[in-house]
Length: 366
Ligand SMILES: C[S@@+](CC[C@H](N)C(=O)[O-])C[C@H]1O[C@@H](n2cnc3c(N)ncnc32)[C@H](O)[C@@H]1O
Image 1: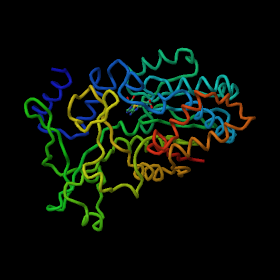
Image 2 (image 1 turned 180 degrees about the horizontal axis):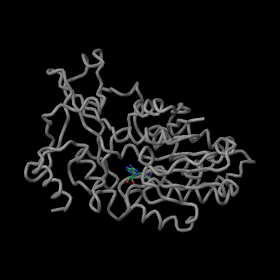
Image 3 (image 1 turned 180 degrees about the vertical axis):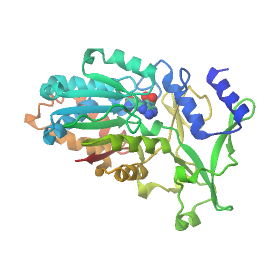
Image 4 (image 1 turned 45 degrees about the vertical axis):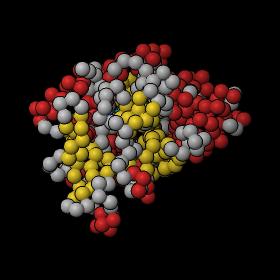
């Protein structure tokens, strides 16, 4: 049996059913055994799913163009680009490659940091980014426990693509009869992992579960939501670290208006393997990706509480098209819009591809 499966069975045998957040943490990030810790393609044609980064270099090139513009408007003397969830370093290579050729002045003033807690992934990123060795540095985390602070008079952009949806979530259900939330845990039936209601009530103060009587009075029995204190804590740390600049993320998810939808009775958890989505998130830990929609309303609120302003919350299509409109201008020096670039741009922005499903959130501190 797969080593990770044994490891999780043992943990359940010792401690009883575990919170789903713990299961997801182990399935994705268990050192050496988790899905993101194992060697091999995960993202792109040969992997399990596509991302905007794997569509081609155009995503990074448009971001590089925009980051350069923000920096030039800021009148700061250096640019700190801080990427989280960089995976194999492809986005970093696309951004730095474009800046080096198209915007050498900004390139010279740029330092690129990869926020990467995993030693293995750092190693893969180092190989990918060998040609930018003097530009790139690694940091474990931002926030209170980080030894790295934003240099005075620098402009920083902290950014990520599909980072927050890959962070562990607690899965909670509404028990209409009891009028209370409960938490779904993971148990073992000796062979497989199975869902089990945890007997302890969910830690409401940490999870901040919905409490509006109007909402709860109409919520169907069993309505399921996912909550990610890890994602909110991460956003809070990044927001508080930022002295001047922007905090940007691209992901799929919903805003406050879309938080409770009849079609999401069972929540948004999905597993991805070989480019196919499935709902068996407890099957094959370590061999498939697990994700949940990002609750952008809570993420945005977290940033505002840390003193940031929301500048944009838009579809990826509209966000990238606004950048492209500037990049299309003849004097932009963006580079030719050859057919390959144009095809990649359509994939990123077409409503039936990644355009509407993905959103961009930009918060800033002036
Ligand atoms: C869905 S992949 C996205 C990869 C890449 N950004 C892309 O768009 O192709 C999510 C990545 O986030 C990383 N990740 C998860 N939690 C993280 C954290 N706290 N800090 C940095 N990276 C993290 C995972 O290891 C994984 O590489």
